[in-house]
Amino acid sequence: MNPLDPRPVHELICRQAERTPDAVAVRDGDTVLTYRELLDAAAAVAGQLAGEGIGPGAVVGLCVQRSARLVATVLGVLLSGAAYLPVDPAHPPHRVAAMLASAQASLLLVDGKSPLPDDHPVPVRSIDEHNGAPAPRWRGYVAGPEVVCCVIFTSGSTGEPKGVEITHRALAIRLVGMLDEHQVDSSDVLLQKAPYTFDVSMWELLLGFLAGATLVVAPPEAHRDPEALVELIVRHGVTVVHFVPSMLALFVTEPGFERCRSLRMVLCGGEPLPPRLVNTLGAALPAVTAYNMYGPAEATIDVTAWKCRRPEPGATVPIGHPLRGVHAHVVDEHDRPAASGELLLAGDCLARGYAGRPDLTADRFAEVPGIGRAYRTGDLVRRAPEGHLEYLGRIDTQVKIRGQRVELGEVESTLRTHPAVHDAVVALRDGRSLVGYVVLEAGAALDEPALRGHLAERLPEYMVPTRVVGLAAIPTTAHGKADRAALPAPPRRR
Image 1 (cartoon, rainbow, N blue to C red):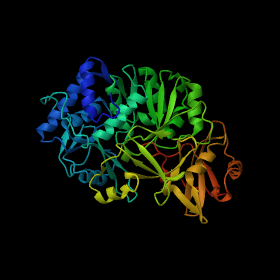
Image 2: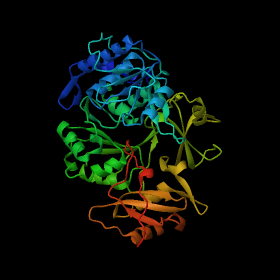
Image 3: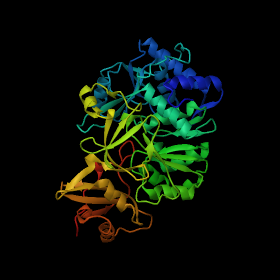
Image 4: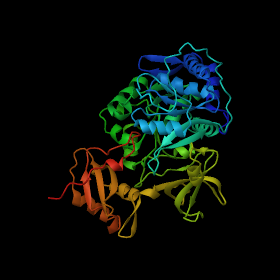
């Protein structure tokens, strides 16, 4: 396959299904779908949408639990020429309504297990209503490369969600590139466990089908349960899996995780990856190759990758080198090339913009002299002398303490270098003092003076937290990322 082939992903999947119609495509508990059965189910969804007058250029909201039906429904929406918009039924109704309105959705498909109120701005239909709908030919609608295939909503700094419009071209380049770079083939078994409102779910759902591989669908909520994940991986012989580092931290401490010997590749992303985690993984499962992946939804899932060393020797794991179709630029506050600064992304990886927000699109997807159209990530990076990129933190997590700039990510990574610390996050409390929150290694006791002393030996005085608090686990968002807003206030000193 040409890694820059702009043909839509669903067309490539249809061609694979024609080559291997009887191969197992999906396993979901006791449900097993061959490629023929998966494409027939997807075509029935496309037929249902056609009966509703929905086709190319439309947006269809999905509120469907993780299951084989979800996989077929996503593929069916793509076959119809429409874009799918994943909706979390746990979100407040007004937020869901705002998302559907912002994306100008034509319809909301539900599965009967995800109850929603009836007062949505679009019609609501059940995916169980028209199982017998006439099925169009498998190939479906041949979408243009700049047509939107998915609208993924991310949190906005203003409190309003932003719908990222991902195009067929960007998704095809990313998935075909991954197929080639990671040598995914028909012998692989991929695990789909990320919430489908998370951009990583796009490659989890679709990548393996390009190669005739098998997709194992984790039950709802299993992505939060390391014991259940170990059992799924062992039972189905999963070879490729993705972890947010916060979840990987739980996975590598789960008793028996070393039984997951079928794994050959673990992709990590969504948060900074502590070296200790990937080194623990490699020591227990030496056949695993781990990659640290980085990328915002606005640039279609991942834009850089780093093949982890054995062991990773530094305080942080690099985010690596740009992937195909990605141009990465490190610039200062005047958009001039710099060794350290904000990361700007350009190339075919970029999304079309934000649904219904031309003002925000113009602000974040800007025309930059010498670069062209570029997405301003808001991430601070450093280009190492060897050429790879290292993540330093967020511009919006850069805080000031007594007039001094502090990158919270730098303090966190230094805390993680202490042998007693399994994971750490740092927050600014009351606008004036830093507090470190740590999850300790098994058997370790919290020694606040020792931890602060460890930091004082490595960081300037103003970067050392005034308090260090022990937690059983770092609170996380629905996507598994550290949730700073949920961190507790430090207890009073006695």
